[in-house]
Length: 174
Image (cartoon, rainbow, N blue to C red):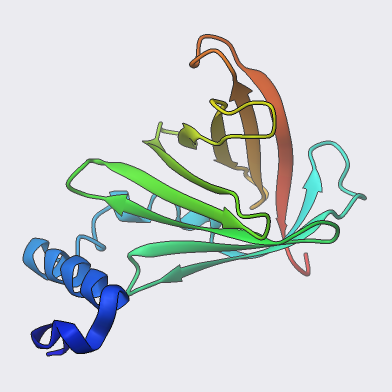
């Protein structure tokens, strides 16, 4: 096993050993109903602002990976820099977690879960001039197979919210 010789695997290998060991000890957890709550977002998408389907602003590839344990987004805007997220159901925490990173160096972590109709994830996502800004993202599947991603921001610790972004993901080729 790779974990036996830590000196050869380096820091990345050590993390893989630690996370891998935890996953083995806890079982996969990836067959639970909760681990499938975000499956509606998996696919190849064209992305437009809500209400403006003619304005194609990005493509996005959402993949189910790691034996069904992870959901990875590859965000590919037509203008601006790319980014992506990795989401997973954290069974021990009874919630979903997502990490976002993009080509500007932005990094954010979100937590949340399925509320019965939408996946709602919230986290600190600092923006220029707003170092403590919180973002709440709501992903809602629609009957036509599209997904709405609605983002709201708060600069007062979540007491009030303002619209941030509002996208519709439509299956590519449809």
